[in-house]
Length: 392
Length: 232
Image (cartoon, rainbow over all chains, first blue to last red; front, side, top):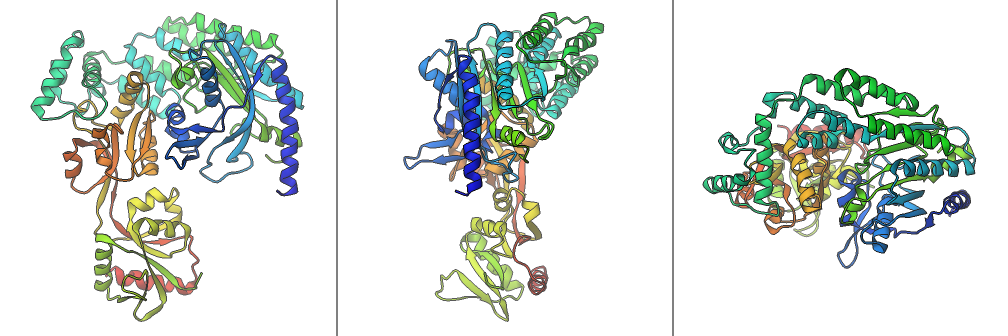
């Protein structure tokens, strides 16, 4: 090992000990989840976009395994191994390697092997309080290592969820819009589709079948679809069932009969996604946008404000924090509060820490029902680079 | 590495036969060196050309790494093997054989799924019902990923398949496939249908040149000569 690399390892180790001391003092149990993870479950949870960056391999027994691309999912698995329901309050911290293939080639700011020091809190009842506690602890840990000033970027997916619920539209449209929210182009395309009567008609699906399906009589659909397949000589193969096909055809039949989304509603959703404001002004800005439409998401906005107040109380100054309605991490699993801590010398593409709420993840990993969860991790090589004043 | 121009040609199958015909038609007389089944050869009258006979998939690797200057292989293999294909490869000439389309095919009975846009919505519902992502069987992992991403499809996972991909849905190993097809008959026989916008690539064999191979002025002149002959 070159002397430089050995020094780096020592410095990282010393830094990690300081970070972990902060976490364990706050009552987080230090855990060491497995580096090697089952590829199937892991990739099913994180999706194909992260899979393209995950080191997957086959062991001599033919088992498909992967090197963990982050420590959140392994920590979820560890929690579920202890508590199969997942719904037992627990707080964990970890420091360990994660591995990601970097398509353009690895760099020091984006290495293919890096160490994450992080925390995860499961099954806490008070979401806003727990969100604030997790972010405050990450900030405290960064301060412990010597970080003074930083930029805080915030987002909150539950505001968008509340806005969707306040707007009149079929539930399936809300699901789609929420799903596409992170991908601006897909989101815009979906809005365009929902506002056009013509685009709402399913393309290429047998029209006479769509016309015969009555969305108010779902029980009749199965027989109609079965009859159609039989007449067309189409044999159903694979794991997707007739009733799944019938359900989607029913949704398509309902879309054809639905009034398209009002153009002003689509414009409102676009305007919401574009909001960028100081965090302290965010709630007012959202409320002002919604007022002319007589829409009220006061409860969600109050929760957002309460979280800010809790953050201030916990020593995190939010006066300069930036809110972005469309701000988010590219991981699909975030469901509520999201944040990133950015250092000017590294830039917004290489945050030194990030995290958020992911209430669906434990269920995806195997819990029988969704469990509240929030977590965050520090990119320790970047942190060391900032503290050392060197290039990351 | 020698200072010769390395030409990589398919070593077996239909592709080899068609390439041999193409070289003969161009007046290039390839002589295999050593045993009849040897994997090296020369071209009569062009002592600075070294011919390597390797599999079509290996040709893509050689072009990618630059260990071959020129090669003839399928565009599907090149684009699958080389993520930054256009940076590393010059497509000099389509050969007019080795046609194969890389397509997205779903069970024909999925009458609600006709376009790529339907896939994402279907995948969302599938995951709710089955508790796991919809699986795509393919040997074209990279082509699949980039095409699905371009079309906004994210809710799937790839199951790598190295043979008889078209049988994966019926066997319950995957829900849909990305596979090659020439006439579509095999897909149809397996109860599958290509999506309306499901053609990822219309592939055929191509004469290509590696941009990362060790080129010299002399070798470039040789390349021009070979390409001119092969383009007649």
